[in-house]
Image (spheres, each protein chain N blue to C red):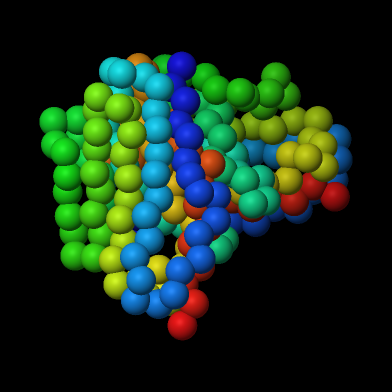
Length: 113
Length: 111
């Protein structure tokens, strides 16, 4: 157990729908990162939060949004889902925003049908 | 922004042989270079990392080397075993401190 908790583990939904993925960082970690991994692809950075504030943004689609709450958990919202959004979504956390000590959660596997 | 290139994309080795994966990065300010191992359907797990003030680091059968002048770093696995089969990702921090990952190397160790 990495200490980073992601829920749900699996999600199957239809095109056009909206889903919310949740991440609880490791105890003490202030920074949360979201990554998308499509089949046989690398880890594409989506967005980073540090202590409640957005810190960096990657190639995140406008249909996607995220936030980090005062208790430091984070949610990634995916709307108007398309077949191509099917992927593994990973959350990672670290103590500070320097990337040191990144720990990944087990991921949420999203299948859009 | 930071750009990390990783080679090769696939690597087949016989059990007992060595495996080497190479990465280059673009941001000269990068100062932290971790390597992750990902088994099928599982989360990436940190296996070794190196900081910019160190040229080489070793942990049992795994070693990482860093050449800051040339902006490249490499992962070396010696005496490979079937359980080393996985996808390996290199990464480098960018100016924001987040990790930029390479595209990954699929390593297959055949008995």
